[in-house]
Amino acid sequence: ARVDKSGYKHFMAKEIAEQPSVLADALRAYLDGDTIRLGADIDFARIERLTMVACGTAYYACLTAKYWFETLAGLPVEADIASEFRYREPPLTPGTAALFVSQSGETADTLAALRYCKGRADRVLSVVNVAESSIARESDVALPIHAGVEIGVASTKAFTCQLNVLLLLALKAAVDRGRMTEAELAATLGELRGLPGVINAALDRDETVAMAARAIAEARDVLFLGRGLMYPLALEGALKLKEISYVHAEAYASGELKHGPIALIDKTVPVVVMAPRDRLFDKTVSNMQEVMARGGRVLLITDAAGAAEAGGDVWRTIVLPEVAPVLTPILYALPAQLLAYHAAVAKGTDVDQPRNLAKSVTVE
Ligand code: G6P
Image (cartoon, rainbow, N blue to C red; front, side, top):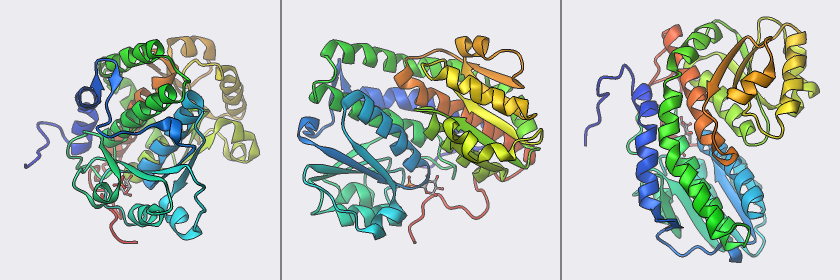
């Protein structure tokens, strides 16, 4: 079927706006009441280790899922970039399942990594958008993300839909491994069902994000910081910004600031801090103070409690609705996408077809 922009200026804007509805579609596909139905029998109690492999944005979805699998399910996870994994010949210990994440299902490095794991891993799983793709066909179990066709080269709805399915897997793993009760699962699923509505509220912050983005677009370098679940989101935010606005952006785990990147801070380098008010927030406030003491401008993406605690010296704040900590990666992807989008629009770049990039990288 032909896909058009249905009134949006760019496919990327349309795909960002579609997220509440495609996420809801995916939940309908995977949930039967408060039971997670994967369409295949995967018993995480019998899996000892999970190796996740992907490229680009899909790799950042894997890094996020590593936190979920380890914290919720106590399942050890290794996440790697496909181009590194495939040539390292990593030994796979018995009990290892391999999980590949790919929007297109055709990325050459990811497919090669999958073929390496066939016969070596106990089971080969994939999380894909294109259900008839090579990666889906060659997996023992392929789980669709239900994002619909994604045209913009910079991945948006595929990322949040990948996170959605990976979170469902981590929740199933938590229950299978006796780390979560059915009642706790039901409570979390209840919050997850509410997320599309919360994301709609976050989309209303569009103009605030656009104002910040116009200033970011003038910078030469931008730093993104995050801790815990927000670290992979900082990586994704920096990737989106450089992909489509060509502003140089780097992401660091907040705790690494003092080990190098702080040397770059001056008034010309905006620092985007992604930090809901969680148990690590105090540490993030100290990091922001270190930045501000050197003249750095902090753009804080947080919730109301975080905004109140951060104090008045922050350059700009984007306030998101408060959600259960486990759901923050899906919600915080939205401002990261919008920031990059509006910076690119401000610079007048080709948002949907950025220079030198391809939607699907089927050659090495
Ligand atoms: C390309 C795209 C990225 C994408 C990556 C992995 O570089 O431009 O947006 O994240 O490939 O693609 P995949 O289809 O495997 O998710």
